[in-house]
Image (tube, rainbow, N blue to C red):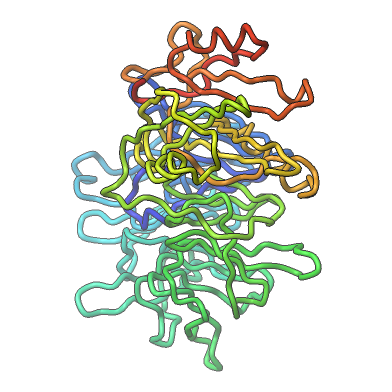
Length: 496
């Protein structure tokens, strides 16, 4: 649930702090635009709501002893590492007129406790530098052109100087430059082979002489030549790459390289010679990746996803074409012999059930509601996880949940439960819906209706579990009279 910025949108990621990562989230409210900052703690995996704010690594940076600084052209805000807003101030020293048509020409960078940020204004390019956590700033005019469409400012591999990417313009190719004096003077350090359409550069933490350029044409490897200039060459990865993370402690191997591509996440355990999909639970859309404090975080238009054990082998789920996204009809079926309910947002699957593809005994109940396809409603922002047990050992039933807590718990249980024992198996995302508010009188936003869930209590009675989802709560009355449990509102949809 990222907001938009001028940098490559698919490369935006969370902000890594001293104890976790900060995520940008849009909670669904009455106006569908309620921005929040979430703090994901690395040790416990606990997710905390820090309140209103805007933060991605395109505009914010963690500075030890100073907290998190988040920038706009007109000022910056400072938070403590625990999420307390400590204040805000200006950083450019320019008035609103001078900032007209200006742009941030380099994301904020922390280097040795100092903060650097690039600015384009007044026909020139500037580096701003603070040594005291943003209290005071110095400004230096620079002799290179910093673009606004990439992560083009970063520390050098050993953290002693700054690197910057000079953008392509007119007939001039992109190039790589270094400053040893806090941005005052710059010297070109590539040998002319710097890759075009580079999104950002990532240094190899285990090999100080190795860096990678993430480009629209694949992953490129950079190392110094005998003259000390950086020479760039192609790797085996030719797809567009938006993110790169080096994940350590992968027994029996020492580490893995994980990349975010246009269609999910890939992993290499042989130093980039070959790649395999590691996108189980993801949608087949562009992702970036972040590894910090034992957490692997994948970021996409669909939200944030973690793979703590780096055990997410498998392909990403296909998504509808852009022109096919939008409202969908969720159709309910009932099996009289099993006394089970089932629902599907797929017209093709529903037709297959009608034709007997799921076996005899299934029939439509006449109940349906309108939700959204996966990625069909950006305002909803959440997809229902769909789980199925098995014919044997069971449960021979489906379960749907919009709750990330329930979904994560069942995913963890699937990993820890042998296939020979009853368990829920993740099948993918069924459709999109709106999470309910903690308000019994008005649980759903305007223009949506609640969906109620009932549970047959099967696990407690030694039977197979089953749930029913309806927009008319009165339909649950006969079930509750038979011993089913009314679990209340579980999500909101467009209409019944």
